[in-house]
Image: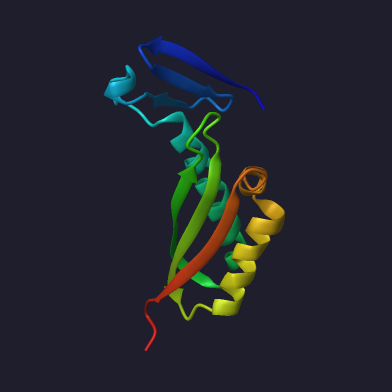
Length: 141
């Protein structure tokens, strides 16, 4: 996997993926940025969120669960001193669907956390990563 990050101005950069997509990253104004893009450390959390959400949804679909929507809200804490690594990350999944099975969701989240999500497993080397979920049943009586 190869990517390129190009400095534009101030703290603004454009990241270009090997698949041909680009994203703007920037810093806050108080640190010389213009607040025109995602912070690089936010990108790490977004990548982790994307990785684990794909795992959870694909696993639930393989389990024949009728998932209509899935999102993960991520909260994280960083060290006060440099390097300001993530020290704690919590992932809260919100899964919506029809007649969803809590045990299957628990299994899907666990499989992602322990086996499939490379980003989550990698970040767990420096941070305590926790997970929970809530289910929103739709279309059920």
